[in-house]
Image (cartoon, rainbow, N blue to C red):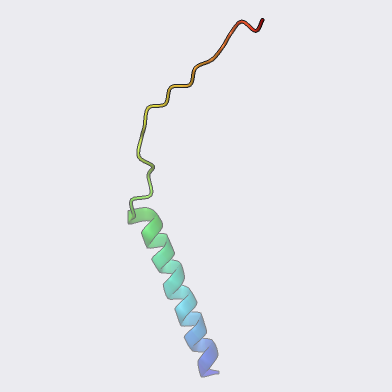
Length: 43
């Protein structure tokens, strides 16, 4: 029974850690400018 309580506690702590990292972690991608040449007239 004590193992189930410890496992439940670890799952709750892991879930809170994941939510905290998602909210406060730097998960935004670095903006970069991209230039892709496009050929309009296919001959």
